[in-house]
Length: 248
Image (cartoon, rainbow, N blue to C red; front, side):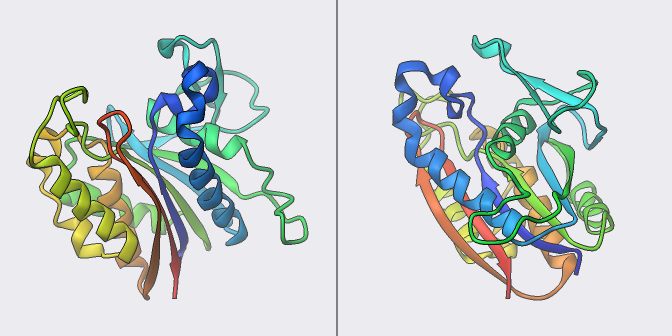
């Protein structure tokens, strides 16, 4: 059973206070929820902590790798692994925010445990239009990474929640997001795997493919899973979910 824990977080650039500026407090609750689920990943003591998010193609991103927040007005580079020697490969936005979330924590000193050896941090991107076979193959590769793998899955819900949303208002968006929230809360693998790729694309839901890789990886790892949904909001017309999964 290689997969031992998973966390789901969104990846808006505004999650980074330097990008949000004076509006940063509006997402304090979201940041706190993300911090909680990331800490739980470290408490699970994985050998490998794998970041999974959407990108232009499907496949691993080798270290060294660095993301940049310059496109969002902040001169800030975010390395996949702290202290890497150079910029290396380029991280997509999803994995840039994931690396930023990891950097907020010291895995060697959990709050309620004795210091542990930091896990190896790796990253995989998945194309937004990846089909079922491609997603299942990627899930199998994740379970073959090591003895104990934890996943930090980055993905936003629909971007059509209101007239000011990036995708404008779509009456299908709220039911779609409710379905995702329920599936994440209940660790419902079928609920995630049954998400329609066409509808997901029309609603600009960036998390569809990463969530389905998570569900496939959990299924191929075997055993039961317990989910907890810590956050569900759409403050700017985009749905943000934070969830934690653990084995039972």
